[in-house]
Length: 82
Image (cartoon, rainbow, N blue to C red; front, side, top):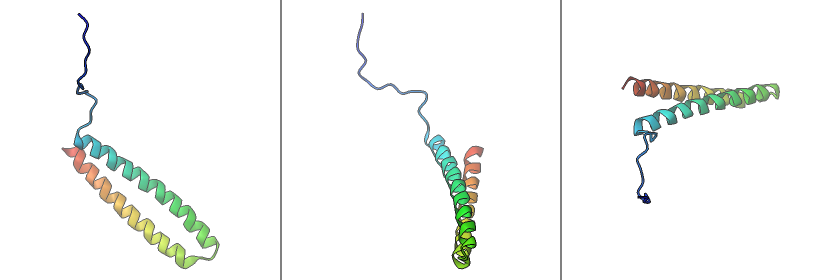
């Protein structure tokens, strides 16, 4: 006897909240690392153009971004220990 299924099935592939958070934090880490590379390229170009004061501020932004990435990495470590 054939019948139609109209209800949703819970799939085993559904991620838990923690798994979603881990993936999101991993994404943020990669995203920040990509931004730092771009920032450094622009800093080098700014220095070549004699824009030292602006380049110095951008270096500070790099440091802040790296500090944020470090916090994301620490959070990821905590999540992986659970």
